[in-house]
Length: 151
Image (tube, rainbow, N blue to C red; front, side, top):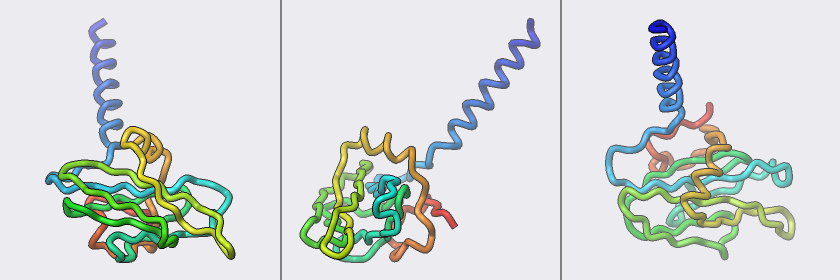
């Protein structure tokens, strides 16, 4: 009976260690984090809309992928290819934000449209995504230091 308890204890230890390894590390400071992601969809799969933060081209988002941005607290403006559709967010220290990129139909081709989503919804949807490819990052200054893109 004692051997069974030892085996069960070891199994629980390894399971909890594996689950902890799957969680992305949190930054040590109070820097706000913005998770930008895009659903995996067949329609518009070849499109990679650019994401701009404060009019700087930061990243291009592939279908079914995400990126984590670490920014200074305060007001920031986000937009994609559609310059008429933008989001202004007042980032608070230590908070997580989630922006979903949707593909909207255009005259000649689709373009990205951003939606700020609730943290509960965004965190759940983000679990189904993969990190963006390293080649999609245009300005590394905005990307969180602990974010690891796909090679």
